[in-house]
Amino acid sequence: MANNKKFYVTTPIYYPNDIPHIGHAYTTLAADVLARWFKLKGYDVFFLTGTDDHGKKIVQAAEKAGKKPKEFVDELIPKFKDAWRKLNIEYDKFIRTTDKSHEKVVKEILQKVYDKGDIYKGEYEGYYCVGCEAYYTEKDLINGCCPIHKTKIERLKEESYFFKLSKYRNQLLELYSKHPEFISPKHRRQEIINRVKEELRDLSISRTSFDWGVQLPFDKKHVSYVWFDALFNYYSATREKGKEKYWPADVHLIGKDILWFHTVYWPAFLLSAGISLPKIVFAHGWWTFDKEKISKSRGKVVNVDELIAIAGVDSARYFLFREGVFGEDGDFSEDVLIERNNTELANKLGNLVSRVSNLAEKYGIEKCGNNLIKKLNLKKIEKYFEDFELDKALNEIFAFIDLCNEYVQKTQPWKEENKDKKKILYELSDSIKAIAILLFPFIPETSEKIAKVFGFKIDWKEINKPLKIGKIKKAEILFKKVEKTNKRT
Ligand code: MSP
Image (cartoon, rainbow, N blue to C red; front, top):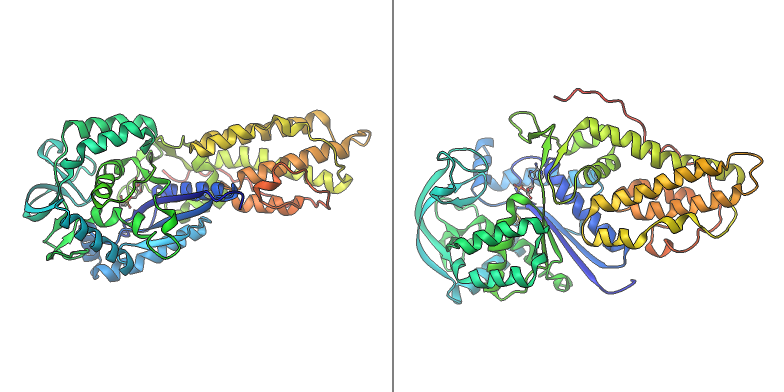
């Protein structure tokens, strides 16, 4: 281990009410990219993902399927695990809110917060959107409908326990001003701050109309509000022996729609429970599909299998982080994915590796100083990764790939009369080593293939070490070109 720094990254825990789609895959892949990067850099990494098994949304989906909630979610969990495996996502732990160990932690915390006097009994009267699993006030609604789902919203009146959220208003504002990075990227900060400044009401944190949830330890008639239960997954996962060292989380990766829950409720719950706060909540944007909102009913949804089927796993992984600016909205289009696969992965990266390995097999390579690699700005790329600017990291790496291709064209190492060809091929092979190591978080399978051809290990220590001379054999085709189909409309 290069150092003993740790990096704890999480994804939202997904509602297992359907199979995962591109939106879920995106956050989980982003966490995988970061986990792989920090592991490469010698950090002790803990990467957590999982499912949010409780709540009314699940009760309703299970009812529709004619199943009991537990039976219903149990059948969907393997679909999530399967999807992550197919996408080559290597998480360290998959948590479910129905795990006994998680429920135990939630109960302990509820009791602690109750004993402290931060939970009181009252009556909730207002609106609740099951799709969002969120409470709304009259003024939030648009024509009586949920502002997000645009569906009719249920009016609730029931006995409920409330969390004294309003008590934490000043502490929250102080957190945002002392640790601005807590709400990232920065353009999402002000909206949260304004809303908190405007009004922060106490939060209803229990329900009595159904029992699919964690029972309140101080009143068995109530189950916990699904978000109280769910948010604590990030903490309960670190209560296992040996995992305590990972808390607090270094970054919670989430979609922009759930930023409020993570930057207001979550730190307030933790402050009340006397638990240290996570460092960064990073909200990415939303993917649309051919410029339209992703929607199952309109067939505008890309499932993980469909995503992979277009041009393979690494092309999908690459596309998602090259096409969209991480933190902004992005548009998914099968044609653009194919275009990027063909021009950037097959033509630029694939051809470079294929040409250089072919010539190196034919002529051999000869050790020399590498002037080409001096043009690779490693420090800049490292900074991009550390700041989660994943699109910029990819741009920079691909700018270097362009330089390598230009170098091949300019120096023409295939010409018999070129006396320097073995040295040129060495410089190129050594540069490809750096490229493959840097691309590993994004396209791990391809990087491993390249490493095998040129005889190096995917290891950060190798990046500055000159490539060892060994036998190089022409690489197999890394990316096949795919024809555009225009079949999805
Ligand atoms: N269960 C809650 C999260 C609890 S975390 C303590 C939840 N689940 S979800 O399954 O509805 O959504 C999970 C994530 O998927 C959210 O971060 C959401 O932003 C993301 N996405 C859903 N559709 C998306 C797109 N179309 N594009 C990008 N991400 C999207 O919310």
